[in-house]
Image (cartoon, rainbow, N blue to C red; front, side, top):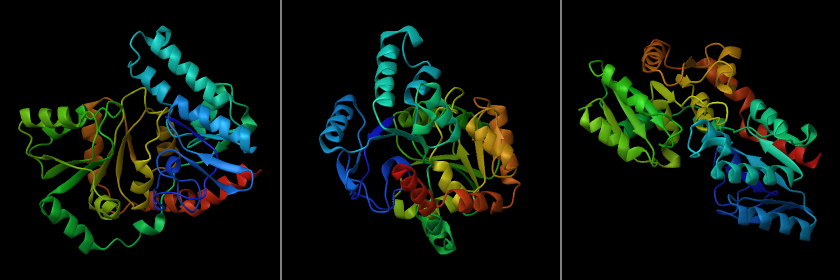
Length: 340
């Protein structure tokens, strides 16, 4: 969801790698709240209409500038996936669109995480000079020189065999991802020395676990969300990373998980159409990932096979992350843009 905001100086977690959850080099206030970066500048993090109204009131009383950060265009994703009941003309869609419009047009700046999402904000009526590029970052240093011993320890902790390659999905398990196709892919690859490791939580997890159980997929295992400290070892453990989304969601939602996969030098299979942000990324930087057609089991299986033939360490991905996704560089530029 778009996050109404004004700048912050304190916070609950200094290491969170997602742009919407951390603004400065310090931390964010927990859940929803505000503090100041400097005189006349505040950041408020919130996710509903009441908090958005509170942010605007706070800014008016204090004379602060306001920034709305968009991590996902959830309204567009909802409409694209057909989750709004009667579609764009229905009451749910109209209410959601009106709320989004109010948020976009009642702040000083709108920030978001990709060039295509910046263009979308402009298409929605935001002045081009008010739109700021604030991409998801990765703490590159955390993913450099990850010890093999740490990877082996995590692998043993999870009970994953040493003689099989790991096809890893780590993240939210919801409707946007289309993980049903991963179940199908695992079934087609069940006789190969592979383990599909699904790590995370979400509303769709129980259904996927049931599907895997009904099909007797011994090559698929589900795990809870792992600790933040375990993330570098978890990502390095994957021989192939799955970044999957349904058709219609790919251009509206840019997966934040991809930044850390690139930073660790992982080989990713991305389901995205050629014209989307992810599709353009793969075309512009050949070798950064394997891009396949969304919602196609055949394409997903072929992409997995292709990724497994690549060298374990993806230098194209790692070098891209070092150049463009380094946390300090991203934050420094964003602060400069906010200050004007």
